[in-house]
Length: 293
Image (tube, rainbow, N blue to C red; front, top):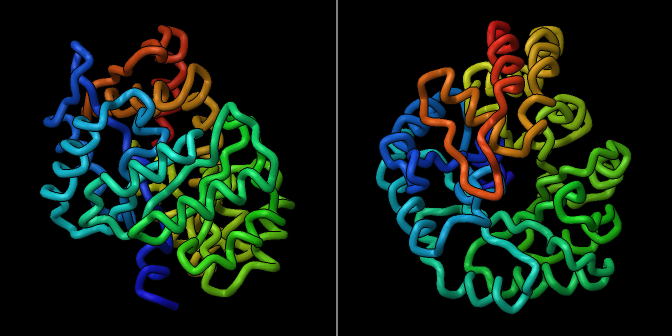
């Protein structure tokens, strides 16, 4: 196992981007979030979809990543989210972005275009060839409208600069096929909080989590227990997360988890359009389930 494989075992937090009431990046809120999540997890993901990366500017992205680098007191590994549906633009951005301090790039599959499997393959080869850092594929068909199949993932796994996948396909069978046939050094990472435990049982390295923003100790502890074979210890926590998980996405991600973070006093719940603030009904439902934690 390489040092990078070791670094990306366990729980990665898909960090939200705190905003103030005027819609500007709230760096005090970000500092609070970093303090809140720095223990009991293994790494941070900056500029993932949970970080509202599609609505932050290039200048904001640079400032946010620089702030995280400078306030990483636990020296957690950093994964940088950089992807899109214009292959040439993604390649150009990879060449222009200061990625110093990151250990890998997480690149979401092209969305909206609905390319063929060959198109997805060629896109990721271009990304891998351009990236100065190892690449993690990110398959999230519920958002992109196109599934990166197990066969295409396994084909891409042969590329020397593609080291793993954040797999968010709800079909566990697909993840099982990847786990069975992947190279030993290819990382299978759950992109679905509730599927993390079952995926860990058949060979996943860990999870990149939304819920860990609000509940890093509980989530990190659950994942660590499973990795140590302590399934009975992990089960009650998973069952509690099952009660709140759907609420995180009911009105769009990260509306739910930001609402939970505000209730915990970590950072404000403000989101950028086209997201809207949580409805009163959602806030009440989240508040009720927060009592489980």
